[in-house]
Length: 200
Image (cartoon, rainbow, N blue to C red; front, side):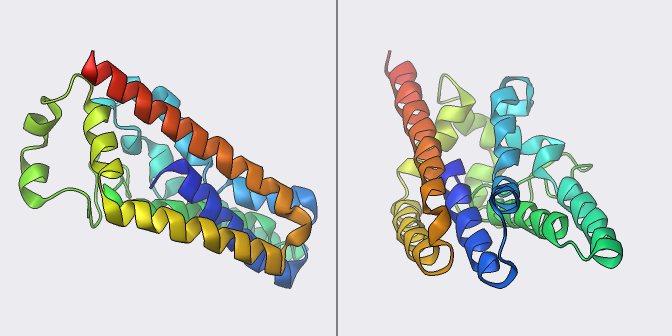
């Protein structure tokens, strides 16, 4: 899923937790940021195979497992849940990414695993052929995402769910929804930039 969706899910997750843990601003932002921080590896996608940032270690379960282990230790000795919950927030991102294209869940196999609902078995077996139909490999993934009505429907549902949950459970942090629009703006600008490059 796109970063704005991960931001929205992170806000939903953190807001629900806030109802029980009463986070301060730093704690809330920390857990929320961990729900999408791994997507910043997209800025290094040019050095990844097929320009696919999901093959980096940042898109595996390794960072989240490390956070969860450290967080568990902090719970035992300091009764502090923030790192542990941040690790879960990160882990949810990786699990969610298994649904659209799949991701490099275990890292060392160096391949994407998951449900891969946006790509057919035929496309998956002959991915190099389909990528070759575009000037840039990332244009293939971008087009498949934005042409999928289910993905667009999910985006709308998650957006309104985010609004409702924040209002109900963490209204004092409602202003952080602005981060969602930064993520949405990034993906839309990238989408139209790729379309222009393919058209020219």
